[in-house]
Length: 83
Image 1 (cartoon, one colour):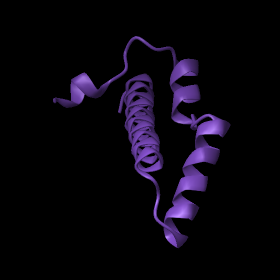
Image 2 (cartoon, helix red, strand yellow; image 1 turned 135 degrees about the vertical axis):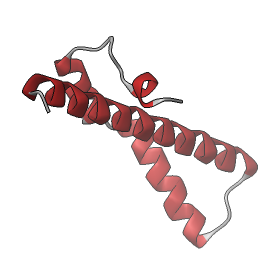
Image 3 (tube, one colour; image 1 turned 30 degrees about the vertical axis):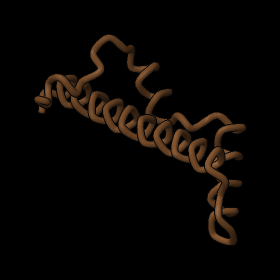
C-alpha cells in the first residue's frame, strides 16, 4: 500500500482528531482487561479465548486506524504550512 492510500482524505480535521484519540468502548476494554488478567493466572475456556482473540483484533484495527488518522493529520498540517 502506498503512503497516499494510507491517508483518510474523506474525513474532516475534527473527525481525524476524534479518531486519533479513539479508544475501545469501555465494556470491550473491561472484557479485554478481564481476559488478560485471567489468562495470567489460569487458562481460558475455548469460548473465552475466542472472545479475547476478537477483542485483540478490534484493538489492533483501532490502532491501525488511529495511526492512519495521525498520519493524515500530519500530512494536512504539512500542506497547510507548506513544508
